[in-house]
Length: 384
Image 1 (cartoon, rainbow, N blue to C red):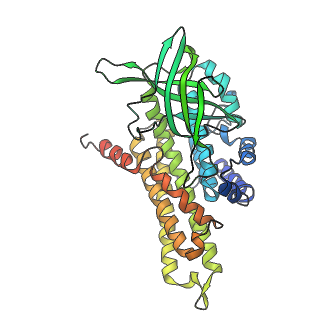
Image 2: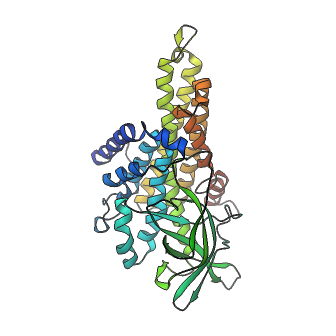
Image 3: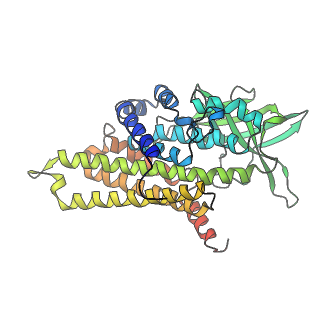
């Protein structure tokens, strides 16, 4: 990808930057401390078309691409990661599986609402005690009289319990392969389906203005036609979705890291110590310089991964590198920004305190840092 953004991309970036600065930043701290979901902000993002950015116009989308989504996520995360992850999960985990693998009927039924932002989708993958072992689900689905009967529990599911959540696509064991491994399929379950219930609402360290819940399925029945993609291909489909999602999470991490630079620059010009603004001291200058270098490097990594994806080239390794680099940058920058702010950095009234709490999950969600290193090593040809 050439250096610099095209006029169309730059216009989108500026538009989202203004929205984040004027509509998100002034109010999100209150939502965050109350643990409240920002329905009005989400509605605003829907009116802007952000939930439909990478989807075709025939389904109510904006006809853009995945890189456009990443640009929006970076700008939103400069102000707040809860808002950014709501968009990321709604698009890459909620709507994208239907767009990539769903039937024509599933696309026509669900994508217009998801693209408009009036409804949210979720993806049920992680299970209690499962963690990174997504290839061995305990959730099961069996065919019975033309219906899938789903039983099991999913944990840490983003966008799963809001008032506008419309569906969740879950991975479930639908049988056994000849070698004894589980046959994994993806099944779409509307949120009002009997037998599906929203379990505990987690008390989280960060992302407090986003929605995260446990989902429980007890004799939950949906039509056989709710299978997403091919039977037995659910795990392979999920891996493709995660590869793409890692680029989006990388963009979010870059946004958080960049927000730390923004806040540190402002504070370094305002805060005085020993008769000078602290920005005049070399120790602070070097710290902020390192922070900016991390942002720049991580951004180049996700730009590269996105460009390869859009060109139809292999991008698994580059996506893992981008996700690893950006989550490291976010954690390091959040720590340094908190240090620059001193005692005020430990106060929730300042954005850097929120950034510090939000950064850690980027090393865990959508594939831990250890998983990213494993993927990179495998792509380099090192043995499993």
